[in-house]
Length: 127
Image (cartoon, rainbow, N blue to C red; front, side, top):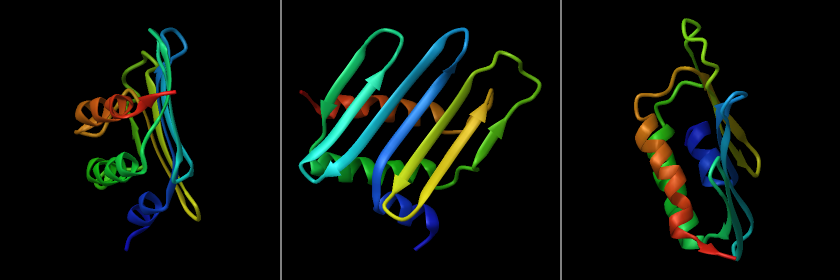
């Protein structure tokens, strides 16, 4: 098993943030405290959302997450663009962590990944 797969298999927290100083940031955080306590927090320019996710949905999320990020590089930077859009994806496992980040450059599947990550709140329940 590779490092990325191990980290996702034992994942207890996922965070995605994207934005700039001028436009603000959107952040998604999913934190597993126990199998019955998985919190979803989404903060964006339009609204805040706090909910929970079932263990089954969390496991589905992890499987899909691996499919999206398995071929990503750790960093993506385009120094020729100066709009300052930065992003980061942090995956915290019980014994390993991994972070991806970028500035003005993204993995090829970024748009579908971002829709997937933002959609994670749709499968959770509001608390």
